[in-house]
Length: 175
Image (cartoon, rainbow, N blue to C red; front, top):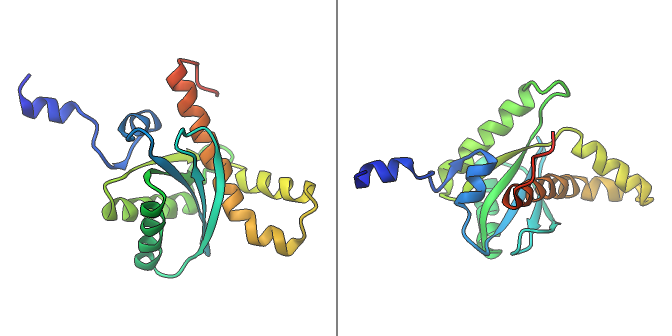
């Protein structure tokens, strides 16, 4: 095999990748950012360097993509991030609707700004789960509104981290 064929067989360093290729493209010791893309905000979560635990990070109030993207990359740079996991809001039956299309457009725009790899993670019901957790914790409506997006991002990122760890250990993926 010549050099051109070897390069063609290697996964691309960035762009939107399937979770398995995404995991392989990540540098060792780099953190990940999970993103819950909403129409008004971006909820962010951050992994630890061992990629075992996701923690809520912050919420970015959305303005224009150029501003939002620059802020996201600034945060990523400051935390030594090696990739992004974006929640893909599928319908309950697994189909994609307008929110999924908007999220895919966000990912394409982000991929144009950075060589860091991006993966999607099925986020069905994560916001509902985050809301339930906050209600059980007796959080006020105001407090829930302040933290729900970054908690949803935490659930998205933790799901992806768990899946990548299962794959690394050779376990069958969850259905």
